[in-house]
Length: 79
Image (cartoon, rainbow, N blue to C red; front, side, top):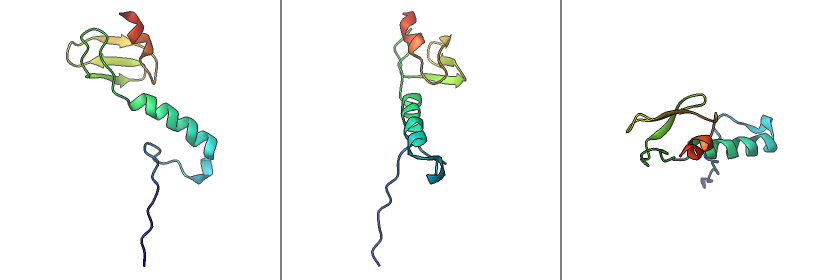
């Protein structure tokens, strides 16, 4: 028996065939933006993460800002 490779789409856990290709593509784009590494607008460190829906926090300088739910583009425009 020859094993076949499974093509795994990263970040699309839990989305099966029943949701459709369009929904999976949209979710993939949002998930990629949501999980990327961000730099703090105050100190420039990479420890800038989302703590809750729309709340972004830097654990190095303790800078906290309310911004977008999935992306912190508003925080980048502050400084």
